[in-house]
Length: 514
Ligand code: HEM
Image (cartoon, rainbow, N blue to C red):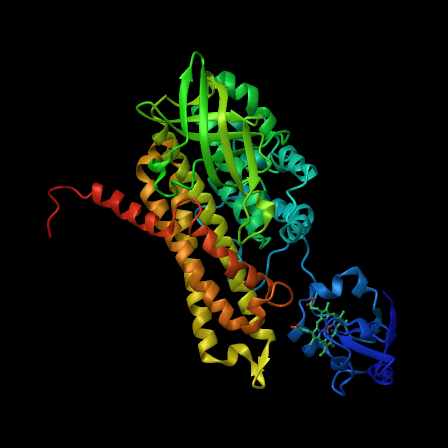
């Protein structure tokens, strides 16, 4: 990157084929050789309004600013315009977006919140820095190439105790150093956990977010809540440190939201379970070392912890999102595990499975909402920088009307989510199962259905750019393609709505009358 200072007149001399300079945001670029390689073609760079001119507006109408920071393009900069300073700079790794509604209100200057304390602010800053520095680059690469999360990053998640924190507060965090010591285990609550989920989702890489050990967030709690102390001592430390991974295996081709339809069967042989059957859509299943498996057993259902073995095989399932999630079809062929691997009481597995759903759904909807907010930010920025019919896109009333709906959706869901999170902080696990299952189901339905409405609005605002996987609309394309996942995983949207209402109806007093 050159540091020479030029005048606008100097740049204007370089305005023909083989000798093209342009200005973008006070930086001078020599495109003479690059023009022939330009992905947008050479001709667009040679027109009178571009070659030798300030092309800032044209550039930002067609490219994301990150293009300028890619090393192969950054070196095209030969200097700057004398007396001018760049106005468009990348944000620092821990910085907050200044775009209204791009951050939840508790992070916006001048706003306060009854829920968040100083420890949450410290934690949020550290988490954002970690996500932008250590996670986002790998997330973007893996989302595209389909490779699983690197072992190096898994271990970093272990070392910072993010793996443990994503399970929520509890004794598994005792004595641990959280995110380099930025907060103590005693301070850690569900709002810190919410921050982790929401910061991670800002990567805008839905498949990778599942690949980032989401299987453990749903597969390990049954071990922590229902496994014997001996079993916990044997497997939990390795999982929390990132040496081993675990996933949850409940759904089957025979049973999705109707969990009771599962056919994977376990019978007892002396002091072992013998398990046969199949599981489908198992997140992280392609690489997990342990499987928390829902089985039909004599007289009911039982949840059993199953280590990977020769009798357990996994194969990848191709899905609409990235293979980095490790979505698997799992086959159990007379797999034998000790009876001591039972999680909870034999025959009482359904309550283990159902109570586990609340935290899973809360995590999914938190991440889904954060992804939705990212799309609101994309649309606010784009509607400002994109000019159509000689005016910014947001000069159109219909665009502003869509933005109004989008903002209202994320803000209302955020308030509801923070209320639910506050309740989680003040209820035991059993109380949450009893009192929050319906509310969380309704909130999940709300977030995922509004998410798809937002995806549609964003697609209209981005037009053709919303259907290409690179360029200006890449996050919108991704969200539009992957947001329906959240409406299915952890319980289909329609079932969520129904569950929420049925739970409420159960509690309508029999003597209630108008
Ligand atoms: C520093 C100067 C420039 C660099 C490094 C650059 C680089 C790129 C890259 C990498 C793409 C592929 C799409 C993407 O990744 O976003 C692209 C596309 C494009 N560029 Fe440039 N470009 C530059 C300047 C310009 C200018 C001044 C124009 C003015 C008209 C222009 C017009 C286009 C067009 C029309 C496309 C295709 C956009 C699309 O498919 O939606 N580029 N450019």
